[in-house]
Length: 403
Image (cartoon, rainbow, N blue to C red; front, top):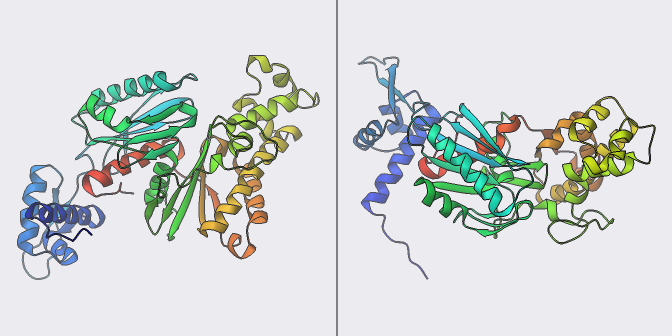
């Protein structure tokens, strides 16, 4: 049995620095005296910590507060641009990256198309994008946060298996640290998105949240009591490869009937393409006959769905129903009342969302589903990059991105 050991002076100081910095970020502008009261540290300790934070550019004076009879106290806060963070989303058909400040403001965006490439070629494109982002930073970035599909061991930054990228046991964090000389943190993209929506998505306060990303793949990030829950093997939320349909369609994971074969964006477009050829009355019919040229595109299906084309509505709502059925099981297992949907499939809006909601209610115990709120995400296309940046900031500074 390992026995607890006494904290070293260095550990104690690091703890105090993080405690003060967290208080500054959450409560600032704030005075030294108020920091001491809130942290229960001595004023001498707070002053000592401030010396280090000023030297590192992590605190600034912003004027004086109201006086209680004596000299007005100096107010302090964390400067928004004290550090730059690089957040990356290895996403649907492209790698997207952003340079973000400590308040979540995006200073620069960049992207690199994957063009259907996976394996080593996808990795090369990711590295190319990161090289550009590092070169565009105004100073040495705090580090790099990455959200990627698949099972990710966040403790080592190793991608254990990313089906759509054909990455297995890829030491992504170590490889990028060696390349850039910067701290690198890697998480599943849905888990990163959950951090972003929870941290500054403006949702009503709850004990937990599930964020489901529906695009080329399907995955969920789970927040319980304000903390990211990753499971014993870092795979919590991998709902895309649970069996959902009895049609036995093959999945890239090697199995059949996975949720991704019926509810993901590629599955929805494939269904629209195959069925359009049999429905000449549909506005999708032309795209269906052109299946050898790519078939129905997202833009075509969106337009047909918005116009009320019967086939388009049926295909999209059916995909939503498959997702809702799986979410019914998630509701029964976790009883988390706030479920947020993000990713390309949310472009179909309320019509798709309604199908998800209806089937989720039918698939879960009413006592639980009646209290569950399923909604669309609020952070748009930058959600994974912001979540990856939040992961980096938490690991390096003990902070969350400020809303």
